Image (cartoon, rainbow, N blue to C red):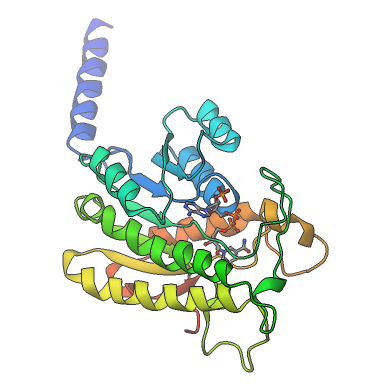
Amino acid sequence: MRMAGLRCALAARVALLAIGFGVLPGIAAAETVLITGANSGIGLEFTKQYAARGWDVIATHRRSGTPKTLAEVVARYPKVRVETLDVTNVEQARALAAKLADVPIDILINNAGVYNDRRSCKPGDDTCPGDWSTQTFGKMYYPLLDTILAVNVKGPLIVSEAFYENVKKSKLKKIVAISSSNGTLTGEKPPRPGAIFYRTSKAALNRSMQIVASSVKNDGVTVVMLNPGPTLTEHQSYLRGEYKGMLETSFTVGHMIRTIDKVTLAETGSFLRYDGAVEPW
Ligand SMILES: NC(=O)c1ccc[n+]([C@@H]2O[C@H](COP(=O)([O-])OP(=O)(O)OC[C@H]3O[C@@H](n4cnc5c(N)ncnc54)[C@H](OP(=O)(O)O)[C@@H]3O)[C@@H](O)[C@H]2O)c1
């Protein structure tokens, strides 16, 4: 009886040492993911699903205080670390990277995005769909173009550059940009009118991240652009039942996580659908 107890204790110590040295597959130290725009929609769902997997999640947002949605996630998953990051603010991104200097980031998800005009939405009204009409030819509201390009194109460059050393020193070394089929140049013949700013921004995002991918390939860093597909986020909930093609957020994010798991350096620079299918440029 005593011998069996001793053997058990010894086995437990060996297992602990093996985990510590990363010898046992699947139970080594948790990987880390940093997500931008993590307080709503797709970013919030990434936060929840990675947290449920037991990963170390750095969930970033641009609000002045912790958003309620993220406070609720932390209450359930206390390991989730919430940080402030406006992706258009270079100084803030660099300051956060300095604060996280010792933290390897396995997966950096550039998710934050703006797609339409939310001037008429009340603050905190997550179900407000926003206005698409002010980016239609003949009705263009140009300050919206500045915002969309700043968040959707400049933001991912700022964030990828600022946290590059964290990614480089991680195990998985992956940078993801959440793009859209709206950025396609060849997949839509002829292109439908409308949403000029948003669609242009995603085309520019794809091109910029494609070039980032070739710039960092020699460091073993994989960069991919993902199209989540038409996802029923809080802001898009008005489309439920309206448009048959809409997909649940948990579904598209679950698929994107599996695609991110699978993607390797061989596919760096690719534009992929949520389920890993190749998207037309
Ligand atoms: N839902 C879809 O069907 C769909 C389809 C294709 C692509 N996408 C892309 O998926 C990504 C997420 O979109 P979503 O549908 O989840 O939209 P969402 O619910 O509106 O989420 C967008 C997030 O980006 C944040 N954000 C905006 N400006 C920011 C800034 N300057 N700094 C940091 N964060 C900022 C927002 O923060 P606030 O709450 O503070 O505004 C919010 O957390 C976007 O890149 C979008 O283009 C979505």
